[in-house]
Length: 285
Length: 284
Image 1 (tube, rainbow over the protein chains, first blue to last red):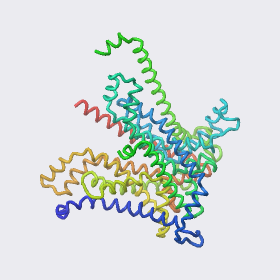
Image 2: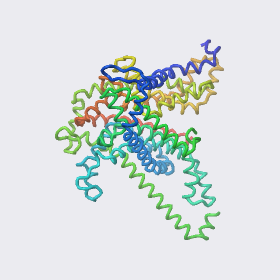
Image 3: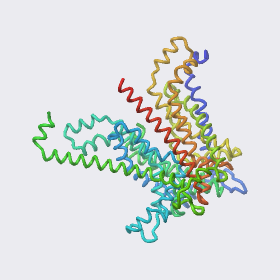
Image 4: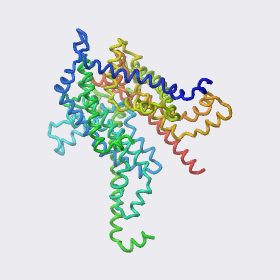
């Protein structure tokens, strides 16, 4: 320990070293390998060789633009739905939950306690053709006589919305809960209507939660393939389904690797556009 | 003062506002209760269908109550070994990730050092990458280094995506930590290691426990990254995935219900302890 006393400024680096080396070797280096692989050509049988094959990227975009667009579209719609459903709920718990707040929060987190795949399978049961939801919708005429929910984009988006809902609702709750109630009272004392007080005080103060929730929902949703696989049809497949099958079934590694990077670039582009719209300081602060 | 005079001056407006407030109050409450129903619905289905007595392979249609699935919970080949593997991985991964995460969190909260921004970025990036990219990049690493897929590749992957969660959890609790206690210990002649063991560790123990539990929960639930890096091994989520293609047996729901039950009991206990502590603090 004498060593640490003499070199106190080394202590933080010693603390950081094991964890950061781990992340460096098993997170950063693998991304390098993924990039390397994405520029290889060849196939599984004859082997791959690094040839700066930028064509992989063009092929990925040209052949699978539909999947990319669908992924961003589904993830975007699911994010908006989760925000619309989650905001009033988070608001209610934060401002009306009283001393039951923490217990009510449990309801928001509860879906996470059921294995992801099992809760998605449960939606498959609920939305099944013989299930209650389809029969009600058929009877009231929203769905035709042989209308289905499973194997439609509706089912996939509904599944994504449900599965990532806590990622949206929790940050919303945290930012709403931190708001000083006296600010809202002050606005009302100064004759702001409740609605106006909400628009001018509560909503702006909760924006960090909206931003965090949006990103936490959108990013994993855009890469998801489980909902599309279990609740959709091949027409609803997202880019995650393609990447997954190219990696694990078709062993077409360069194509799959380049698609992974296109996916990340697409997500970054959407996040950047979003950041411009809401203001970057809200993204980091 | 103002509310009384206002009530005299603008009685109608005031009543309307009160009615509107009442409606709004209840609309929001009714809405929230419906939202809770929506959140609980699939969970109810999972639990209910663990008692189902399915005719044929598919456990989709309700066809009678039975306890058989619970009695024969490992009556499906492969389910028990998958569950054992999941528990082993979750146990080890959460221990390693919490330890590494604790050290990083201590450095970040306690010390000023060069490279802080880069460290924060390195912690943040795995949290904000789609899982499929994390899984795919590790797969290419292992493929290129000709690593044999199995227990160790799964464990390495799980520790990787758990570290950031551990850092974030522990950091949040460390920020409100009173450093005077440690300084006092050092003033009284304790060296750094003794101070850490006798003062720091007991104080941050709840944060470490929280990180352990979070990592355990994330690890036992992970499908995507594991799917890419499991090779021939099967964790519980991989078992469910495989079973879903040919019709998942009701035993899967039994295990799902048990995991859910354990998690809920743990969380409720935690919340109740917190509420009691708050009440005690308010009374004191």
